[in-house]
Image (cartoon, rainbow, N blue to C red; front, side, top):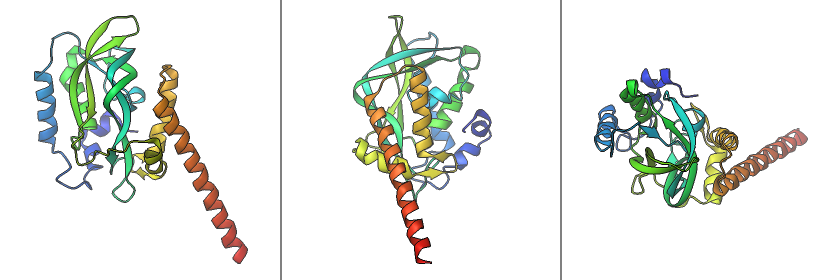
Length: 235
């Protein structure tokens, strides 16, 4: 699992060294993106971040408060190709992001003001090694009926790693087979499934994808067993 030490030590970015130079961001680019985003904050209230994927179960950042929240106008989509981390150039996977339309339930995190830039830097290094995400400030609807502004990252649709076909049938094939130094792409999906269930978050697209990945892995396992049985029968 990716943790604070791996990120702050620089080890995390080493997992992305196999990515072509024209796709991989430099540390300077990552830092500049963070600075530009901080400078564009619409207010100086508490800074909230809106996790909708792995940041729910592995936030990396320290936070003071976490609350269930809803982002309008965006939906979950495995629309980014991943070729590092939980995948590789040989076995590419898919990464979760947000695309326009619908709504997304997730968990809002309030970051501590005393270490704001340090926590954001960890977040940027983790999420922006290829610049495939676009940070933005958007309104969230909280469970208690209030609204607040939060940092949200969404897909860059003209990015080299963007995949326009994010249908369950297309994505499941990649997720079921991809793996890399940080684990399997499928494990990411299963852990997120558990986290969403704990927060009582509903997402039919994600549920359908999880079911499809399980079926594909089961089918692959059956085929391997059949192939092994056939090989033994010939001996």
